[in-house]
Length: 196
Image 1 (cartoon, helix red, strand yellow):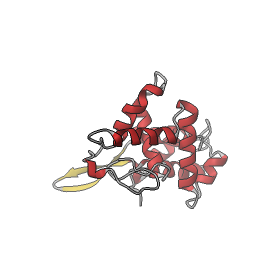
Image 2 (spheres, one colour; image 1 turned 45 degrees about the vertical axis):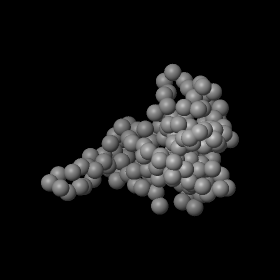
Image 3 (cartoon, helix red, strand yellow; image 1 turned 120 degrees about the vertical axis):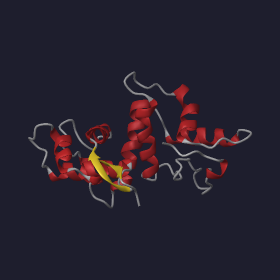
Image 4 (cartoon, helix red, strand yellow; image 1 turned 180 degrees about the horizontal axis):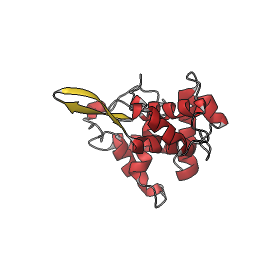
């Protein structure tokens, strides 16, 4: 089960709102429609008098999730569902379609292949002593081969790598440590740190 605040769930909520069509013709588009509805996936907890409750809706987070869905070509430039977006809006096909769209995006835009990620994981595990293959460590190995546009930094790319894991395309533990395929071996024993 994915957390309400995971990238997996946020993109899913974007597609649910896009499917409803309530944003069509509305000033501000899909993001404005979602902000008005206030979905829990975009509410951040607040703590008052030792009680935690959902806080304000993050319009920045909503806009980023809509932009992510457009980049993944689940939504077109008019924020309408594409064919793939319609397929992903079906809960039974969501993980498979979004995982493939994420993989396609990383390849199309940056030349990043799953095999390249696995090669970086293997390289980290072969070091003496082995290094836990966190997203940050894998990126450190891959960065010299990847050309990011000037307007995109690793912090902007990170959600797509996490989404690969959340959709099952790139298995990882709760500590965002990549797992080697077909071994089931978790690298968490290597002292991986949790990402913020």
